[in-house]
Length: 305
Image 1 (cartoon, rainbow, N blue to C red):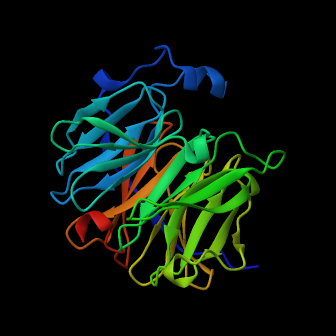
Image 2: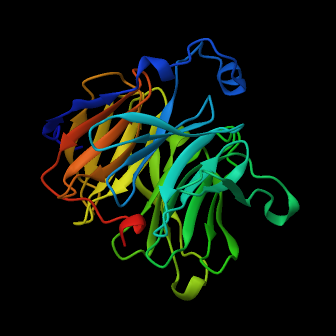
C-alpha cells in the first residue's frame, strides 16, 4: 500500500551489566511464558527530571535506574511482574504490574504503594502499560491473557480525582498506549490483532465515542507493543519480535522505520536527551537500551511538566 519508508539506524546506548543478569533463576513469569530461560526482559522506559532512565525487568520483579552516562543501579526489587512504568510530575514512579495491579514507588525510598488492584471488587486480568495525560489522569491497559480467542482485554482511566473508568472492553491483547496531541484520542496497541485502535475521548469525562482501528500492521510473531508521540503528532510504534520501531504521521502514513542493531525483541520507547530528539528503545532479547536520533522531538512527558 505504501513504499518502504526510510530507515533510521540505532546504536547500543547501554547494556545490562552481567551482575544483573539472572539466567536460570526461578521465575513464575518465565515458567508460564514457556519460551525457555531468560536473563531479563526489559520494558517500560521513562525519564525523570534529572535525565535518569528507569526501566523494568518483568520476570524478576525489578526496576532499574540508568544515569545519563549509561550506568545501571537497582532501584527496587519486589514480588511482582512490572510491565509498564511512567513517572508522575511529583517524582513518584507508577508501574503497571501484571501480578499486583497499579503501583507507585517513592523516588527516594522506593517504598511501594498499591494504588488499585481490585476494580469493582474483582481483580485485574493483568496490567500492561500506562500513560499520563496533562491533567494528571492516568490511562492504562489490562491485558492478562486476552487474545483473538479471548478478546476480553480492557483499557481504563484513573482520573486525577481518584475515580476509575473502564473505557473499553474487548481487546485482543491491549498493550502500549498514548494520547494524541490534543489528548482527545487514546491510541492503544492491540498486540494479538497486530493493529492500533483509536478511542475518542468525550469532553468532561463523558465517556468515549466510536472506537475504531487506526493502523493495521503486518508481520512479526507478536505484534505492536509500546508507543510514544512526537511533538508534531507523529506516532511511534514498537513492533515486538520484528526488531523495528515504526513512525507514522498523524494521518497514519508510515514515514520512518527504526531498525534494531541488536536483538529482535524491541519492547518500548521513550524520548530523551536535552533536545528530546533521541529515542531510547528497550530491547529484551539482548538486554540493552538502544538509541536513535530522530528528525523531530518527542512530546514532553507528564514527569517534565
